[in-house]
Length: 152
Figure 1 (cartoon, rainbow, N blue to C red):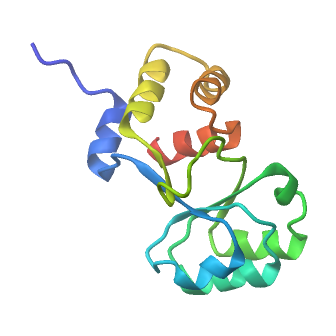
Figure 2: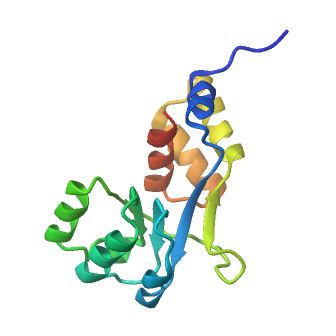
């Protein structure tokens, strides 16, 4: 007997979400070399408004930018407003233990998404899902919340 797909599994199938990839950018010198197709980016440096504007010119499909907490606090109100108008979400958090020299992408795999689905399907409160997944994966709570919104 085949189990009925949960709502999240159905959405994952319809959106064909298998994994989410954040392109890790370590310096502003890397911006010009990015693919124009990047949609999610982690900036591991303190980006200026000019850097963010250039990033969006080169990667017009960007929908999320993750910044470490200390850098997130230095983004100007004008920069935040510009990103909001462009439909880009700022996410606070860091990528702990990510070996950029081995992989320029931080990948949130389907297993994590299925774990989130299972927890939600089993009646977990969203705050508890965020806390548990953040603890298990070392993803920031903001990033876990973003993943939940994107796959829901």
